[in-house]
Length: 358
Image (spheres, rainbow, N blue to C red):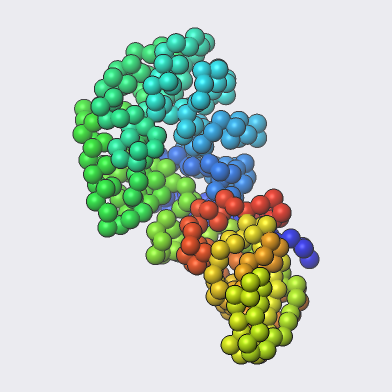
């Protein structure tokens, strides 16, 4: 029996979710986003499983090179682009595509001397105000990229939505409208839709969609879970019951004594904590799946352990498996109970957790 929490990664569920993206955006190619260690699921193993994706996207060059070193040959796009001109020969040698989102990058491309040409995606800031050129810069950037000898003909045009996960927001429509106005008359392929837009904004699908979170079976909408969109959870995080304790009515539990028993009950101690990536700020009552039922968190999350209220008639035994999130218990619920988002929970899993690929 493992003494470590276990993250089981269901690769069949991952492939199902990619097919679901195909169903939602049947006329689009899929740029599968694998940044941040594939949202905590394992960069290389996820890429190896997504054989039907058209291309991969990562944030930084080290992630792209890790994929190439592992033998991944599909197109790879650097979403943050390159940071300095010295990286350009590395991009060319490894057949990496780059996003261009500022003047320094454009100048570097114009001034470089390469033995080949790079595929470029031009990012326009239509309202996110994070990365991307200003709308007023688009015409000049577009012209200069077409004239640049280091750039392959046929640049791609992209933007990023800031509020696609807010279904009642008008900002996504406004961003989509601005983008279409700017590129009117241009024949280049486009990419706008992230996970939320794939689900909720079909007018944004264009030639390329960029699924990230939904590939892992998770909804980007705070009030929904992935199963509502016919997605399957990919990660199942579990651990074991390592202690049982009887407490009487009125006794307090854990650091600070923030949880108090309202009746005599049995407590269970589970071997997982914030040192493994379980959210430290999970509230009392946050659900854990144990022996076919939900039990609630009792007291503060510790570095290595959590405590749950098993109830006065508990029949649970030492060594029983406890599921922190997975098919039995949606990670979206744990995120809400912890005052965070599923992205953070996934990305915070630490090396102490044992990954198993199914």
